[in-house]
Length: 433
Image 1: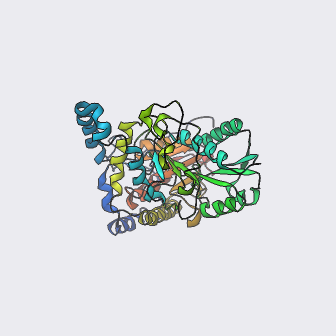
Image 2: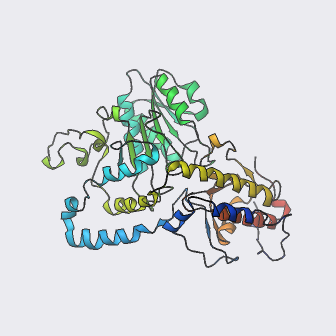
Image 3: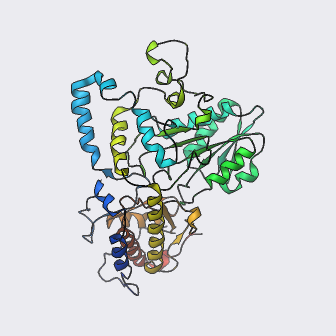
């Protein structure tokens, strides 16, 4: 693109036929929404600097969830009382030592796991490394390869390749839909994203897991873009290992600790490649010989990041009384409605959804291919108070977090997108292929 387009404000722009015809329907749906009251559990301030004067629309919860109102007071207490007054006594008296498993048990029902199968701590990348190397060590003899989702978030591929070099295996990228056909008796495991971060496509966790098990391989799932947005069913579908971050739909805050799931029947066989003192059977014995703890605690490594961990624990209180099934129903309704509004408000040919329309293949985001000028379009949306994000080369991503996203948010986002795209010169038009 030779030059950055200029975007006039609303005055003088031609409105589409039936302007804002979906606004009344949005209001009706919000009034009937059983999750509408949950929005008040979050800090969602209006943006003071955009042109319309309307409340800001935050559609980037698939990158960083909004702040739950319970968090600031909890962290203030942790700092002033638990750290400031109790100090080291808080490891026992305030429950710091058991927080990784306790918070894991709060996440467990959101991903379809029973208590004792999830531990919180470290980053997603570190937990991926533990899961992949630990999975290879549990795989059958004679395995020579690791399958990796060919469309994966880059870190997953980096970690898988590093783990493969360390364990003497090869990495083979495979499209998720092809894994059932490509897995062989030489496959140790497959590392797959539950939801594609770029397109919002939902991969077939039950089917892929079953196909891997039928070939004698393990299933390792990355849940970063699905946990807290839709049912996962780890126990029900016999997933072996899973990891995920907590700062997206779980609203744990920037850099919040990630989690590791280990199927109960595999826990006694799980051998972590990072055997830290926190996962020792008797950490304070300071024994030079490593003996792993029983159960999910063997997924721990070093001293927990207490401030972030307890912020996450407070953030998870927003889920009190909320079912993941209700969240999924609203997610699908929101994304359906947004796509309908985009179709009504956006000039033909200016944007194309790369997110599947089929509910069975859709996560909780809508990705629109918009070429050229996609990055500038997103910048202008943000300037006007509609916050999504951009992924190179030409994708606009809009994440729908059902706990706080309203139907009015979806309608207004589509309306402003239409305004911005109508302001583009004709030479800039045309959806990318």
